[in-house]
Amino acid sequence: MANHREERGQYLIEAGAFHLPGGNKWQPRLTMTRLRCTTGLTKSQAFPGLTPLFDTAKGATRFAIDLGRSMADLGSARLTV
Image (cartoon, rainbow, N blue to C red):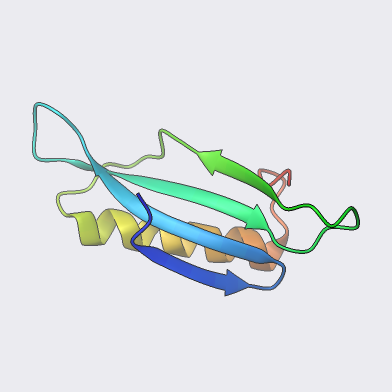
């Protein structure tokens, strides 16, 4: 799934796009992984079903990257790992 991976702060952002069946739309996909935990274990959180839908995989991936960066930088309440 991931065609973009980057570390940002204490998170690994994995972003990509899923081609929806029956049409020419792409859905953003995002997984956030906390790299450094006090327990020494990593934890991941996926964000399936992101909207809006895009006409290109590049647009959908860019949206997921920007969302992941924003969540990591701002400590979003949606990010629970």
